[in-house]
Length: 345
Ligand SMILES: Nc1ncnc2c1ncn2[C@@H]1O[C@H](COP(=O)(O)OP(=O)(O)OP(=O)(O)O)[C@@H](O)[C@H]1O
Ligand SMILES: [Mg+2]
Image 1 (spheres, protein in one colour):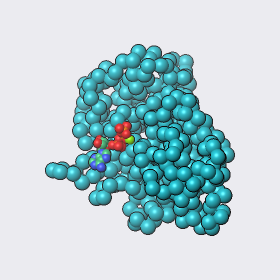
Image 2 (cartoon, rainbow, N blue to C red; image 1 turned 90 degrees about the horizontal axis):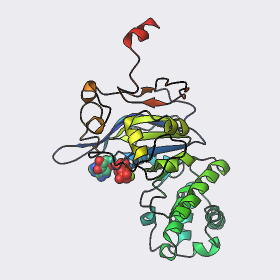
Image 3 (cartoon, rainbow, N blue to C red; image 1 turned 90 degrees about the vertical axis):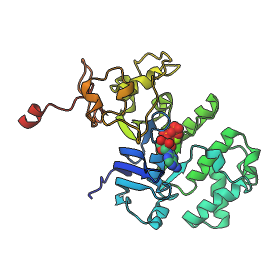
Image 4 (cartoon, rainbow, N blue to C red; image 1 turned 180 degrees about the vertical axis):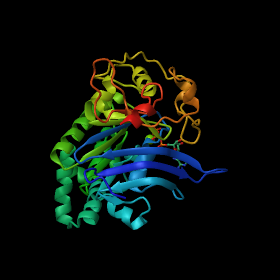
């Protein structure tokens, strides 16, 4: 296929099915997303919507026996059907991930120094001395006090927030172009959370880095992400530049997420009323045939249960300009262009 020259990574129509008993389980249905160099891109959605699985698909780290549809292109190379060895080249060096339970990813019996320098020596070919110097620099960048001493310490000697920052330093050790950060601030108190968000913002400016930031918290993305994807049941229901998406959310699911919050999201008109979304989320494998959100949607109409909406540009509303790249998959609020208009063009 002809790859998009500009994007760092592009997923097109990606579906993932895992082996299961009695039947295989679909965990991603149809994910298309891209990240450009220097961008911070957000993914938000309820539990089980496929956020972490998308990160794993981009790292070639899906569970054994996973079947992948669609295409995953990294820096112009289609890796969808690539052998394990090709993915190993990508991991660490091109793309790395801070996993959802990042502190569990640190080895309890190894010093921070050996965990950090192992990546540098393997991927960057640095000698012992150079790797140590670089490790000190990285710990300093993630604001770990007394980095030289930290290198000799073990994970249990740090607080949760510090361990989180150390996990980020390890993910950055091989100087990846894309960092996938899976809920990196969820378990942290607000001040530590703010510190990590600031850190990401700074790293993107100082290093040649892009970030794919996974969260269930739209408020975090408002402050951080250039563009945002809203996930549900292994699909993208709405996407666009974050500020436009929040100010002018069109999909009833996005609006429901905004209303379910205790506080307003910066830039959004949606009143936060702490209103839980009725019903239970469905997953890619339990989604109904039409719109996956239809059973819970306040705005559904007759077609929604049978017709599968595709992502299309949202129509103009009032005197507001519609932002380029703002699309939604909703038959009611973003109807596809009428056939008559299409054929008249
Ligand atoms: N190893 C696995 N085998 C089978 N199904 C799995 C496996 N891991 C995840 N799933 C299923 O895949 C779907 C997507 O999971 P994923 O971990 O991507 O969700 P998520 O959006 O990251 O949720 P959360 O916000 O809870 O982290 C879910 O339905 C989950 O139950
Ligand atoms: Mg997850």
